Image (cartoon, rainbow, N blue to C red; front, side, top):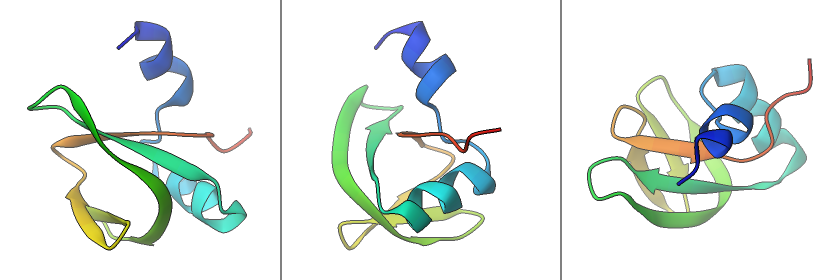
Length: 72
């Protein structure tokens, strides 16, 4: 995992996640505890605590989401 990926491709804000969901781009779900990619697919639902990808809920506190951030 490179620092540039965390800097340039992180989806942290609801705005970023909603934008990616709206245009239908896939996201990478990275487990911060196991240091491994655990899923890759389109976002189905977003809450303040979880993001659903491929019918699986991922806690936003324990996972990093990478994709296309919302353009400013």
